[in-house]
Amino acid sequence: MDRTPPKNIDEYITGFAADVQAILQAIRQTIHEAAPEAQETISYQMPTFTLHGNLVHFAAYSKHIGFYPVPSGIGAFQEELAGYKQGKGSVQFPLNQPMPYELIRRIVIFRVQENLAKAAVKEGKRAKSGS
Image (tube, rainbow, N blue to C red; front, side):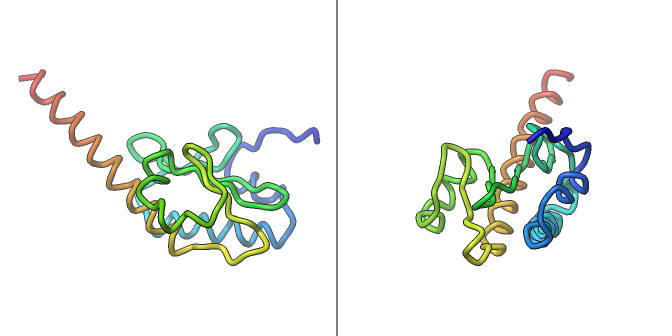
């Protein structure tokens, strides 16, 4: 398939069938609610949310939604994600099963807290070196 890389998340979502678009919009909304300060972008040709660095990515495939909360986001929810196919920093949510929006929300909140904590540590180091 010769697709032009999407410029934004709206463009990405419109490239899919209506049923998949609805799921992608719901995931996007779930992420917005869990991380209202996060910025939307496209990274690795996937919808990405950033807040003091990458927060999460997601992408649609023929049979699943790939969700990428980095390895720490997978590790922190290992028990709840045990029923899903996983990679080092990714999980696959099959399109023929209910989408676990509540779990996605909690993973995003975890990632927000993680990124804010890292940013605070960096800021603290910066403040010390500047004094």
